[in-house]
Amino acid sequence: MTELRRQSASPWATRASRTDPDPRVTNVHDVDRGAALASLFDLHYTALLRLAAFLGADDAENIVAEAYCQLYRRWQQLRDPEAALPYLRSVVRNLTCMRLRRMQVVRKHTESITNPPTVASAESIAMMQDDQRVLIDALRRLALRQREALVLRHWLGLRESEIAAAMGISVGAVKSHTARGIATLAKAMEQRR
Image 1: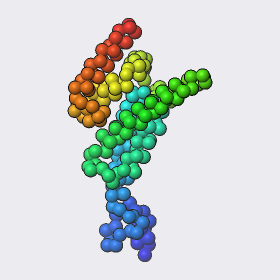
Image 2 (image 1 turned 90 degrees about the vertical axis):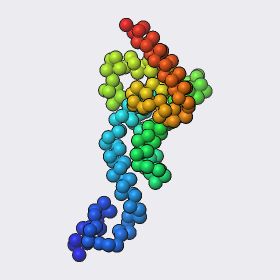
Image 3 (image 1 turned 30 degrees about the vertical axis):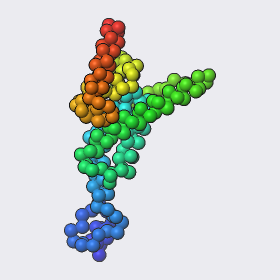
Image 4 (image 1 turned 60 degrees about the vertical axis):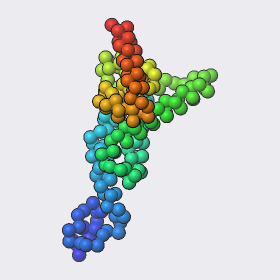
C-alpha cells in the first residue's frame, strides 16, 4: 500500500507495477512538454535574452518569459518538437517588434509629457563590454528590418532562407537589409575611432 501511495504521489514517477493510468495526468504529452520546456529553458534562455536585447527590447527578461509561456500554451499545436526553438525565436522577435511599435506610438502621442529615461536591467548591462555597448547603440539606431536581419544572420547564424521565413520577406529583401545594415554599422564604428 505504501508503495502504491509513493508511486501515485507524483505524476512524473514511472509506474512499472501499475497498469491503470494516474487520473491526475490527463495527457502523456504534458509530461513530455514539461521536460522539453525545462531543457529548452536551460539551453536557450540566455541566447533568447540576448536576441531580445539586440533587437532593442528594454525589458528582455519579460519578453523571453512571455515567449516561453506562449510555447507552453501552444505545445500541442507544434508539428515537431524541433520547431520549438524557431518558434521561441519568432515569438521573441514579434513581441519585441510589437513593444517597440507601441513605444513609438506612445511617444508620439505623449510628446508633452516628460518620461523618465528607461534603465536597462542589471543583467543586460553586465553582458556588455564597452565595445559591445557601442555596437549595440549603433545596432539600435538601425531601421528595424535591418536590425532584425543582422541579428538573425550574424548573431544567431541563421541562413538567409530561414531569416526570410522568420521575417516573412523574400531572400532578396534579407540580403538587401543585411547589406544596408552592415554599411550603416561600419560607418558608425568608424566614427567612433
